[in-house]
Image (tube, rainbow, N blue to C red; front, side, top):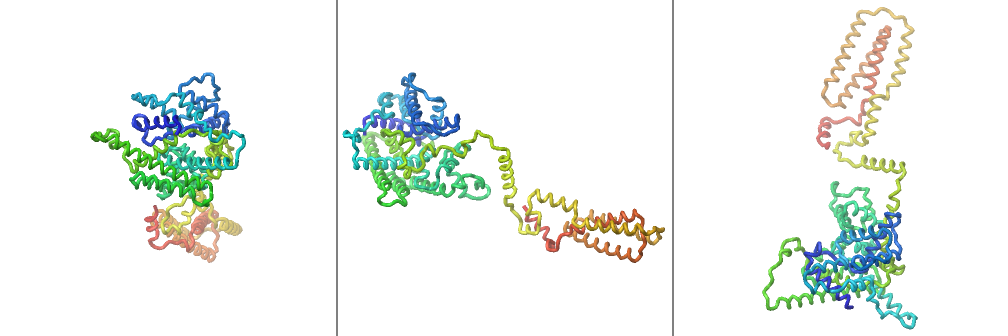
Length: 580
């Protein structure tokens, strides 16, 4: 390891020893120079999208802003340097991205270490040295420089192998980083579709939008969505219009694998065994479906073996330091922040070992080729998946600032209302006997108005009555007999009693309609027979009242339900009891 890398690692170790006063959480991770540059690129692309509508940024602008950011954060002179547009907004977005991800960059670690009281920890390195390390000036490797100017096939093959190994190391460390710090959205973006789970740009965009609405991390949104589906039920299941439902299979596979790693972390107390099992599970997931001669498979196996050896070395060195510090002295009293303050959880010792391993990765020199780091290569897309800049872009909201046409907005609202109205309802076991239960509220109201206002049999009866009145108009009217007058009075009294009986009857509605309809049929037949027997014409007022009465009775007759819809005795009470 280079001298500056050792100095950076010592600085991170001093932060870990005093994490309770310098870090917001014990699981706060430290990002290296490459991670800082990727976060700056995403912040600049987000600001460009807000001002121009395109989520993109050029490499030259990123390098200019990178140089300005390093000088400004380290309090070095930057007055004569070139400044990109909207730099203040970019800096604000960069800081908020790291804060929401529970991450500290190397400059933040340096600034926090400056607040310590110990002089040996304050003078670990100077700001200029840290600037040279992060920018990559002091980390130029002369091993890969060919003085003859020609590149042999063997050296080219070695470079390709090193690139594949660096990609495999980044993916495995991203899995470990997400396992330790679930708020790390950039680590999630590196591994969400490695291996291929069908979770590309659209899936990550939907997750990012849901995370912004709920103010949660992307991983927590995906986990909560899968948990809601597993719980099931009307009160827990996500809505049918949730865009994450289209990516349910891929998200389920990803969350199941992360649950497997969490289970290993919590159930195995020995850090040596737990670290080896976690690396073995990640290796099995990455090389699944790849042939033995695949370069990515070989690189993954080599990197996994190297990381497992480093975990064992870290555990051995910590045990040696513990033995040296405790010889000849009594055990120290436990500190207040280490007793029942949220610091005791399953797998804590393994988490500490993984944090040390990630800190060593953060202290490695940065990548020399910035273009390959930020925009990727065509040859490595099969290993890394979608580039980070493309993954974080939001294709569905590129035209968000444009107002949609009125027709589309009205159709969308009507479809949402129709979906809500057609949701399945809880019905009783006798609901099949009611026609109204299978209708929507609008259709039910229109059907009732039609049956009440316009009976189906009224036009035919009106025509028949008009023809009957025309035939009576030609017969001369005679004086009424006393018997006829008595007959009319008895009929009127019978009609009044029948109407009063209809209003006062408290029986079932459907049975009442059936009885009234039967009585109407009998009365109508008796009256026709009497008219034919007597053949005595009546006055126009009597004809008008008769026609009105026949119309009312025929309306009741037309509304009579069919025999197949009749209820059994006691079925009404049971239906009302089971109806919710």
